[in-house]
Image (cartoon, rainbow, N blue to C red; front, side, top):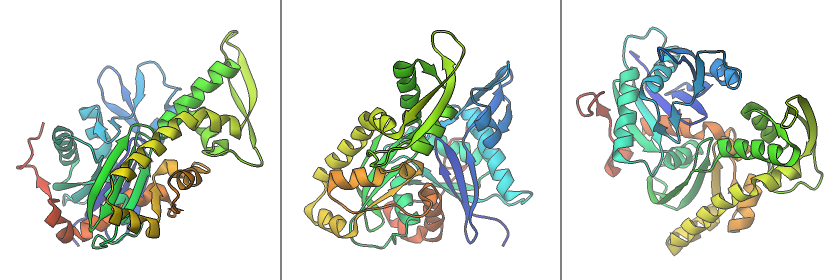
Length: 342
């Protein structure tokens, strides 16, 4: 074997890379810390993630890929090059890459993403929609003729699709996901308790006591931050059901979009989905009660795979193995010559 073929989940919150035959080999936060004067990346991944909100003078932390779209070309290229080098080590052969892309992305956004990946070190790139990758990663065969409903809720957006025979019948995307939940918690604590907290603290609260449906036995947690009025340290005890009410308006946007897409789906596919259930993937699928909320809203069984945050990358790996099936739907590798490289 002269080189590796990579499957890359280019998420807003994390970059997950899988290698054919090896599975998941890298899972890092999609953050970079860079020098604001030279725009040179100082740290990428976990170190940059934990530096957010703690940056020294002259250093800034951003997510160069937001909602599957490149928001900063130079930093995205440096970040991806760092992660690919970490996986490939000193392999001189450039890999083929299957990468995930939002289902509603434009041609310009796709070309930019391909350009970034090739500039970072890939030989050729094939982009496959996130819900399709999530379905493959959850165990759905690309040749499966029945309908499957997939909701992939990550950090930047919630992408959903009805899939049949390795192709999308219906798709939609809601720009509501994990990062929005964090910002909602920050706002809630400031408005109700006069407590200012950082995004990392809000994320910790979401993971520990956050929920999509009220708990029968409520849980509590102490949130620490700064008093809005005095500027001094302050601590308050909050409950999980308070966080549930705080997140409800955002969760409603996701369930309304899912219901609307269901109404556009053909009766035969709806019958298939009723039998097979709905697949919920992505990092936000781990929010307590999220599957129950969707199940109650759509009257469906909801399946959350093991490690739902890895499904898209695993699906990219499946697509690499079975691209001969997907190429009949227009999926193919693009090389440097076929895409204008910046």
